[in-house]
Length: 102
Image 1 (cartoon, one colour):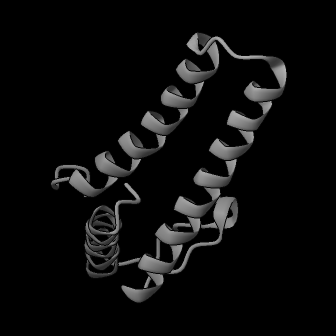
Image 2 (cartoon, helix red, strand yellow):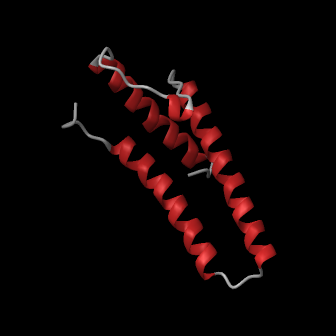
Image 3 (cartoon, rainbow, N blue to C red):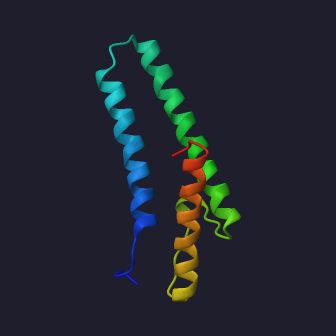
């Protein structure tokens, strides 16, 4: 399982880390007042929530549903199920890019 192409998981992790890094850099280097900084943070959180919802919806379209931190992977999942999940993630990321959400 671990030797397979993991482009979807790499893209998902890169997507999340890029958002966190961008938000952190924006807060550190944008010379604004405290009120403006709080507004920027609030907008970033809302944007992240919107992207998270879009990812979940795109995955549901692919037959995969996860529920945040409560998502589980068990040993009873077959390679076929895992392959379908990876394919759904790849499709979800493509859809999000087409909608300018990634």
